[in-house]
Length: 455
Picture 1: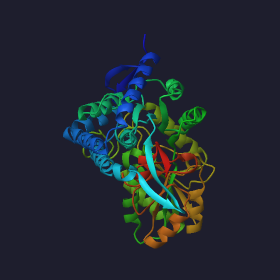
Picture 2: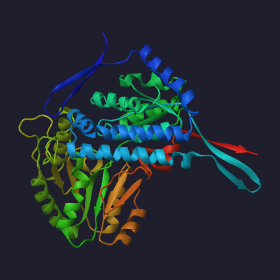
Picture 3: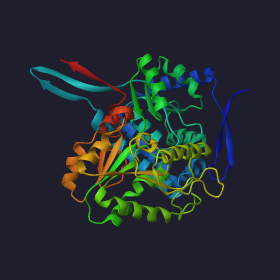
Picture 4: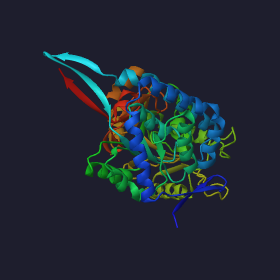
């Protein structure tokens, strides 16, 4: 009997469809189809690719509310947020479609008497592994530039969002893409080495947990395949000199509690100058007490369920460990109404280095607030991490914010705004948060061979 995965609504517990996992023989056939498609696709013009990707964006927008509802039903996201992310995804697709030729077209050069051109050749079939927290956007943010560069893709999505995974492949089919350009794989994680060892697989693309990097990054190296890896964050937010603490709280709370904290680049550690510390904690407490925790389909809801009951157990364990290490509990509702996927926003103050909430990324609605005596100490605390995804700096003086940003050891720095991503800007990281970039020109070039031709 074949193994299966189940689609379940984390809010209601309602079970949807069950999907059978592919056998190794079926998996090999799909990779073969993707390779055959690549041999044709790599020779298509940028105009042909551009037209198809504009159709892909149109397909998403035509029934956007239906697709947004599917995303909400399967993995918790607020319906209002789900619609906004899909709109942003359509914009991302169009940006890549409109700019691919400009970025990837061959470029003439002449240096010290040497004449030649650079070309960006596609590699082949790219294998990707993706998490559940942004089922459409995370996948398409990588797949779109990879395919526009002339590659084809086979992707394993998270096992708890199979309906969304299936829908992404349907997007491509409905837009008119040939079979094999984008292929969804219902497989087990244990199939990854079998896939990566396949000679047709020419690259590995991953967004996920650190343990996944250990597995897939090692396999990519073992079989000499290039890889792009985005991993954990534990991102800092620095609250420096300002004139209005209440306003600062209103602007910064979204950095932690948007999407109930289940974002790789959401701010986890809030580093606040001691001058404003007590006032900041009090105002943040008042703000959190006013949040509405309810049905994610309801437009008045601020806080939705976590992805599953295991997530609630994990965050509860992390919070308890931090409290046992003398973190101050400011507000904590724990689970709500005996519903096993709700965990209300939590604030931990007086956080110190030895506490779990200081060193470990808590990927849930928990804000860890750390007191700092100076700007210099705030920078030191922010950099005191194994990770390096993104950091946020809030300060009335933007010029001084820029000076601080230059001293932060993080891949992306956001000044007086919530951390996010944009199609035209490189989205990247340092240290144990992974390597290489997505989005922007770098995203289009990630899985290409920059070929040098001399004449």
